[in-house]
Amino acid sequence: MSEGPLLTVEDLRVAYRGRSGPVPALRGVSFIVGRERVGIVGESGSGKSTIGLTILRLLPQSALVSAKRLCLLDTDLMAASERAMRSIRGRRISMVLQDPKYSLNPVITVGRQIAESYKVHSGASTREARRRALEMLEAVRIRDPERVFDLYPHEVSGGMGQRVMIAMMLIPEPELLIADEPTSALDVTVQAQLLVLIDELIRRRRMGLILISHNINLVASFCDRVVVLYAGRIMESLKASELALARHPYTQGLLACRPLIDRAQPELPQLTRDPSWLDAPDESRRGTGA
Amino acid sequence: MIEVHEATVAYGDGSGRIEAVRSVSFNAAAGEIFGLVGESGCGKSTLLRAVAGLAPLAKGHIVLAGREVGISRTRQERRLVQMVFQDPYGSLNPTHTVDKILSEPLAIQGLDAIDRRVIQAFQEVGLGGQHRYRYPHQLSGGQRQRVAIARALITEPRILLLDEPTSALDLSVQAEILNLLKRIGRAHGLTMLMVSHDLAVIAHMCTRIAVMYQGEIVEMLEVQRLRRGEADHPYTRMLLDASLEKTRQGERDTEGTSSPSLTR
Image 1 (tube, rainbow over the protein chains, first blue to last red):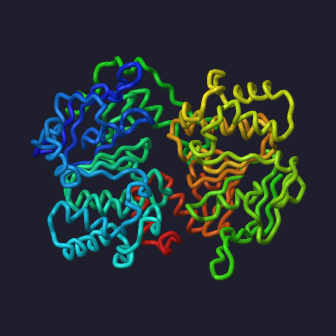
Image 2: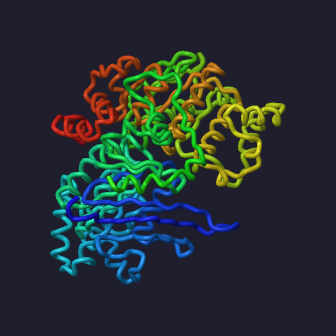
């Protein structure tokens, strides 16, 4: 990376207020993202989605957030005003969530939603926005953009809905895309197509990508680097190509627990989780230097 | 144990009539785990519902344990077949405690020693006694799916129908639930019919597999053949490619070919 990181996260801590004191969700997480694809993996409750929400400052008011640094290029995301954040969300950092059924507005046609996303951030005319939205639908490989433009979200399939979401998120040309389990609600065959699409679009635009998923194999086959999260702490951070060399038992456990097509196993290896991992020295610091 | 002959399930009528399952036949022997695999909308869940007696057949017939069954079943016939659904968040009544969820099928079937059976079911699925009087929202996804499995087992069925039992769970929890299902199947000599869109899960669990596409079984094969990558039908091949973690490469390969899912 010659131009320095796009996103810098240093010692990020988040806790949610609970009945008996704060419940930690992130316990000092540090990583950087350049114009590359970084995967964040972990099980449910490991805090991976909290990372995405924190970067966009979308956590509820009750959440307690602290960080040494949380910067998008030169912009300090911790210090930015709510007004400044509104121009960052969507315009500079955007987010694709798991289920398009819930993230699209059910009473507005998909085309208008994409056009609106462009209009809000560029101030273009309705006509121009429509033209750009049609182009974008084509870019996400929707065969008949004119027809799909006028469909409502319930009239499109899950895969198509997710393409629409991607179109909507990329049309303002953000620098960073956060994809939180973007394909988990979809079939295997559609998953692959969609990941290839995201890959192509972000490469062409020289964007950074954070892919959040519980599926380590999927993340590994798709990203440049992988950050492994357990209970709000980074266990290991390594190049995707070197995942087979993972040393941490948690990473190894995540890798092993998936059934394989080409090999019969009487029992699947089950993951063991050890809370003492949380006391180990911060692996992530070392990882970010790589 | 399960025989399905030329089964057709149709929804709607007149011009709106759709055959979700068309002339499907297969057999599963006692103690076998038989897999149904295919993408969303291919009719695999509908077929499972037909076997469970939840969807009427337009044509064909279904024989379970040597007796032909229809949509209206006797209490005995219902007890024979139990089902585990995909979403453990949607399939457990949120206003009932786990204890009630497990006791109710026993009361319906008129079985005795309810307390003993509930405790036994708990042990079998690896839940601690402390979970017995909790509500579903107080349990994790994996724990809920264990409750759903306990509920299915508690009436001592001979056939277990599994509709994507792990696709709402993390991979690490999926491993635990799949191990549990295998163990239980062996212990009780259960015949299982398992639906999934994940070929790796099906290959791990099943001995034989039927691949469904647009309401029909396009290929039936032994798991050993699948493991060796010897699928005949182009659709099965495409599923295989997509599942072999060749996410990027595999996709580029399949894109040029006229695989069925890309010609819709």
